[in-house]
Structure formats: C-alpha cells, structure tokens
Image (tube, rainbow, N blue to C red; front, top):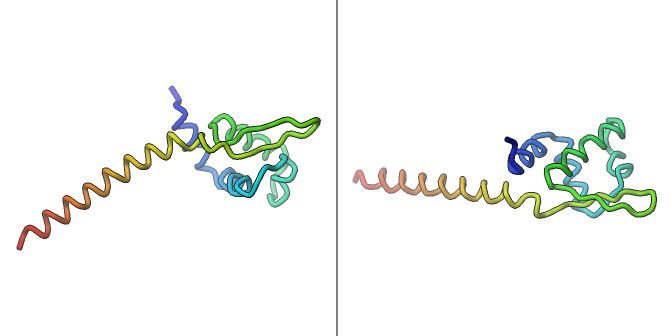
Length: 105
C-alpha cells in the first residue's frame, strides 16, 4: 500500500517536478505559464502536475476556463516529520560516537 509519504518522495524524485515546485514558490501559475521554461510538452507538464496533486504537494483552483496551481504546504508535513526523525537519529548517533571516541583518552 502506497502511503502519502511514499507519494511525496516519488513526486520529489523527479527534477522537473522539483523545478515546478520552485516556480510555484513564487506564486500561483497556470499550467501554461508553468510549461514556458521547459522543453517538454504541455501534456507532459499536466502529467507532472497530476503527480504533484496526488502527492498533496500542489493544489488547483478553477477560475473560469483557467486552472491555477499553487503550493500546498501541508503536503510536505509527513516528509518533513520523517526527515526530522531521521535527522535526530543521525545526530544522536554522531554525538554518541564522538563521546565514545573522546572517552578513549
């Protein structure tokens, strides 16, 4: 079973999707404006946006005929918590190793 955390990391694994998120960090965009700097088709951008939406990293709002995409900050909550836990374990392990090595005096 794929979790929301799995979906977030799978979405973040692609460099194009990460670039889309960076562009969205400057404000809301339509798919067309998001596609401008890329040398890939607009349908490919739409597929990337679907993956980002399914992962909860991007939300979409319809205004007339346009669909506006924006970052969804809550989408990274699970990934951030997982990374924080891993960071804590890593730092604790390094501190314990340092204490052990320094105790050899």
